[in-house]
Image (cartoon, rainbow over the protein chains, first blue to last red):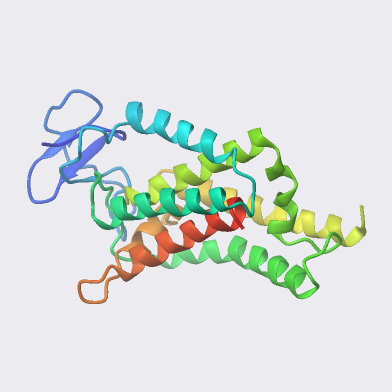
Length: 171
Length: 72
């Protein structure tokens, strides 16, 4: 069964196409101008469990992030919690326990645009790391250490990390 | 605040702004630039035999990010 989650179109591998905006009617294939990549508005559908819906996952992630924000850095609880949460999400992704979005089979040369922000980031990160990663020469870790001591910031950052992880799991 | 810190903060900001700009450009209709998620999806397709090497590598990286900022 195709599980409606988000986005406009679901494409079941080798089966039918389904509109996931709620109508559950067969949908047409979307064609856009990005010919070198699969359309990013299509989703490869595998049988998704009943809990794989935003109404379930979003509150769950909020609770997980709220709890995770309680544990200070360097504590055993913080280590165990990150390992456990990351382990479960990795297992869900590797074992294909969720619906998956389609991914491009090859990239265009335009993907090289991503080297620009990546290069700037790596350059400043490596420079500051080589200079000792101190207050005058902060790496990203040093910069965020202080804000992450505040519970609200930490919980929000945890939620962002979980959201990113979930996005990867569903790819 | 030292000048070097201000420079570092500025460059981090520039990197973030560039990333946001490329992502916005990628999401425009007809764009040939892949989104960051599409690049991650492409990397995760890589397999060595039956082993999903790309998927494990990407998950491992993101797992490490969480551990680095929330646990270490």
